[in-house]
Image (tube, rainbow, N blue to C red; front, side):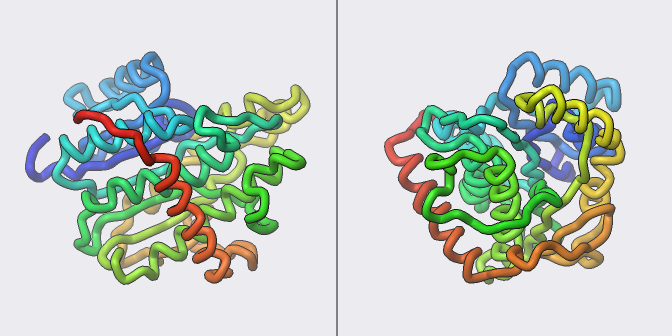
Length: 285
């Protein structure tokens, strides 16, 4: 890594349109930090990226978002190795069609889609350059209607995969808007993206009928990545921090996603979860 290299961190890069985003970053000359769950998939991605640029600079770090211990360890490695981060793309996500509890005793959709993206940002915030050029991009969804079920965030009493998924994406939009107006984050641009329905493995736990819908109606990975690439390539001066982007344009989202009182309450809950879940988890870097 040279002193002039821009450093980008990405999750969810080993499959779907995440591969397209990672390839684009490599083509643009970024030094890439990739967090991924499976060693084999990380190796496969590295092979793909070397086809884009045989001299690509990639650091693949094993990280399972359904394990707070794994995420803490990955963040500690990054903090010890890197002086800064110029771009953070928090793209990994799941959509479960049955209740799955993580090793941290949290519903997996809530943990992977909402809590861990925020936790990674919070853990590595000190590395983000506050130069009005750095960016944090969260992957949201057009399926974000509804509300935040504070009394049962994991839908333990009555699980609905659809409701759990759209709650997590509503939460992402609220957090994006809120982080963008916090004075302590001045100099950083925050954005969230609706990629559209894409042919990815996100619905792998769905019924055969639902999987067919993803296959028939889903767009290509290349099209799914377009809005992310738009945000990567355009300077922050041409973008709206806190904005919800779809089809490479600033877009309107649900009325609930503009409720900053709800966003503040959610941020408080996420901070509490972050402290409770990471308490006692320590590693040597």
